[in-house]
Each structure stands twice: as C-alpha cells, then as structure tokens.
Amino acid sequence: MIIVKVGGGKKINLDYVCQDFASLVKREKAILIHGASAKRDEIAKKLGHSTKTVVSPSGISSVYTDEKALEIFLMTYAGLVNKQIVAKLQRFGINAVGLSGVDARLWEGKRKRNILIREKKKVKLLTDNFTGRVEKINTELIKLLLNNNFIPVICPPAISYENEIINVDNDRAIAVMAKELGVEKMVVLFEAPGLLKNPKDEKSLITHIDKNEIDKYLKFAKGRMKKKILGAQEAIKAGVKKIYWGDGRIKNPISSALQGKGGVIS
Amino acid sequence: MIIVKVGGGKKINLDYVCQDFASLVKREKAILIHGASAKRDEIAKKLGHSTKTVVSPSGISSVYTDEKALEIFLMTYAGLVNKQIVAKLQRFGINAVGLSGVDARLWEGKRKRNILIREKKKVKLLTDNFTGRVEKINTELIKLLLNNNFIPVICPPAISYENEIINVDNDRAIAVMAKELGVEKMVVLFEAPGLLKNPKDEKSLITHIDKNEIDKYLKFAKGRMKKKILGAQEAIKAGVKKIYWGDGRIKNPISSALQGKGGVIS
Image (cartoon, rainbow over all chains, first blue to last red; front, side, top):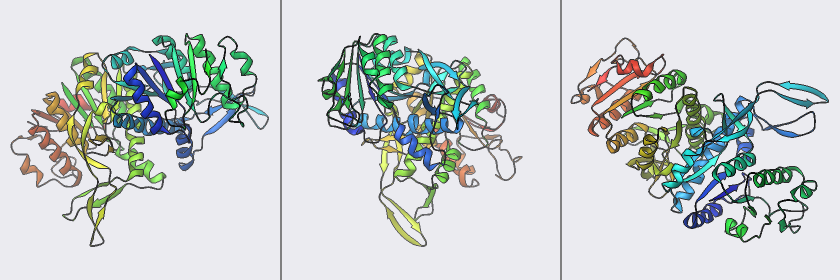
C-alpha cells in the first residue's frame, strides 16, 4: 500500500495529481491525503477572518485556530477541496470516497486548548484553541473501503478524545497512519521540484537523503521545508521505508516522484 | 430501515436531533440526511455572493447555482454542517461517517446546464447552471457501512453522469434513495410543529393525510410546504409506507414525530 500526500498550495495542479493517482490505483492499493491551505487562506480573508499565525515563547510559529477559523477549515478542507478531488477522481474512473479525520474517528488525538503565545514582547495565554495532535488512527473504515475497491481521499481536521473537532498537522497524522496501516512507501507532493538545499534555487535538488541522516538536513532547512523534513523523519520512525518527494505542479507528478526525480529518503 | 431527514433551517436544534437519532440507531438501522440552507445563505452573503433565486417562465422559483454558488454549497453542506453533525453523533456514541452525494457516486443524476428564467418581464437563458436531478442511487457503500455499524450522514450535492458536481433537491433524492434501499419509514424534521394547514398558525396541525389524497393538500400548501408535500408524494410513490413529520426545534424531535405528534402521511 502507498500513501500519496498532496499539499494545499495554490500552484498544485489537482487535475494532474488526480489523473496520475488514478493510474497508480490501477496498479496498487493507495490512499490520497490532501491539504487546502491556499483555499483556506483565501476564504478566511474574504470572510474577514484571515488565518492568524502565532509564535510560542520559544519561537515556534503555528496557525491559531479559534472557533471561526475551525469553521473555515472545515469548509475549505472537508467541503470544497475534498469533494472537488473526489469528483476529479471519479472523472478518471476511480470510485473515490472523501473523508475527514472526524468521520468514523479516523484521526483521533488530544486537543491543545490552552497555548502560550508571544505578542509584542508579552506572553499571553489563549484558551480557545482548536488544534491538537493525532495519536490514534481508527483504521477499520479505511480497510473496509480498500477491500471493497473504494479509494479513500482524506483530509484534516481530526477529532479529539472528547469529540471536539481539532485542526491537526497533516504530516504527523500521515506518519501515525503509515504506522497503523503498515505502509512502507509514501509520495509527498508540493510546490517545488523536490527537496531543495536552497528553497530559492530550484536547481539545488537533493537527490537522496539517508534515512539515518535526516538530522543533518534538518539544520539547513527553513520554514515549511523544516516541517516537511520533520514529518518525513516521523514517517521513517513509524516504519516507512521510502519517501518520494515530488513536484505537484507538473504532469504525472506521482510517477515522476516514484522515479526519484524529486529526491528520495530511504 | 428508517431515513431521517433534517432541514437546514436556522432554528433547527442539531444537538437535540443528534441525541435522539443516537437513541434511534440503537433500536434500528437508520440513515441521517441533512440540509444546510441557513448556513449556506449566511456564508454566501458574507462572501458577497448571496443565494440567488430565479423564476422560470412558468413561474416556478428555484435557487440558481453558478460555479461560485456551488463552491459555497460544498463548503457549507459537505464541509461545515456535515462534519459538525458527525462530531455531535460521535459525542453520543454513534460511529457516524459523513458523505456527500458525490462520494462513491452515492447520488447520481442529470445536470440541467441551461435554464430559462424570467427577469424583469424578459426571458433569459442561463448556460452555467450547476443544478440537476438525482435519478440513480449507488447503494453499495451505504449497505457496506450499515452492515459494519457505521452510520451514514448524507447531504447534497450530487454528481452528474459526466462527473460534474451538481446541486440537487434533497427531498427528491431521498425519495429515490428510499426506493433503492427499500425504506418504508421516513421522518422529516423542519422548523414548524408539523404539517400545518395555515403556515402562520402553529396550531393548525394536520394530524393525518391519507397517502392517496396528498393531492388535496397540495392545493392548500404554499412556498416551502408545497415542496415538502411534493417530496412526500414522491416518497410514497417510491414505496415509503409512512412519513412522519416533526418539529426539528424541540427535544426528542424524532421520537415525538414517530409518536405522530407532527402529523403522519400513511
């Protein structure tokens, strides 16, 4: 089985991704996980509730999810982008079923209600945060679907142990899912040709990272790339043997990635 | 098996509905179908794309769904309200799975791309309409879920034969679904005590309609009530033996309806 994860960037070509994913599904069992960050930010702005990033006292930034932000998250991830992907896959002959981590408690975890943030040099406590961390995967529905030729298309949010809807990190959720499902191969698509040494130089592609030496690359990585490498590290720890990175903007993005064109961690 | 349909009105109490639905599920197989019209209209207005009603040359009004309206539809129905209901049901111990008619091609039908409308006494042709009519139900996934103790929570939109996402009439879709699944009982919840003779008088409850005499009531019905009676007529034609109407604003709305408190068509 293979997990394909496609980011939610604006330049990702979902038609290309879905077309290629449809060919993949004809060869092996596969699950598609997706983001929708660009659409989320666009709608949030239009609704006058722009996505807000907060910084922890130790300097780590994250998206702050109050109740309204959570509603926008649900709308854009589980509603708009999820169903658009399902319809595209149907167009390519794949009987896709769109799910969020809330459905059948697919992605379950702990809510982090209170967070400390640094704002204008002061430390502040926020007590209405709807983010969390996926710790448990309820795989029964996924297995049932796959065994009956339905293809799961999954996105956040997840559900807390107390049944609240929570925004979670996609990369971490996938790592836990890979572990629970015994997935050994993963394709990660984003808005770059692959794993870059220098994010500003698309030619600085790293073709291979030894899975035992991910730490070395972590120190060079910045911003989003850091998060992706951390996610990869987590996936490797969870038992994934090969992670293929790839360009979500090009034609045949998954097959290209599987040919090693965007860099491989193994 | 029983189908419970809950409208998308602002005053519907989804906590009450979900709590009562959870008790029902412990007694018999059930599917929950929902709307989200109030939320759709609210978000549409905030996004500067208010829900637009058009009138056909023969005087029948309907919601016009262009591409943007369809996106708002997806966001509010399949994203926001669907997942909120799923989380509520999880809270009451029900392993709910939220789906739209697009997923696994649950609700399939014909797109009505071109519609004639009357605007300021002129007849105009609109060619970018994303509405349609559900004609086919692909029941395999629903049966698979029910046989494995997952409870389906379903909402529009549907998918066209050409794989476009289409806005459809919920009541009609449910009638087709009842037929394909052999459902004989249906509960319909909305923002009124039940089936009213006079929509302005909450005491003018009609306690019983003979299923062969629905036509008689149709001529008295106005606006939304007309659509509901038409939907009921279609459901009866599809083989449903009893339709229980009920108040979606009160505690235990489903059990009250099943006790005949909101009126019964049989």
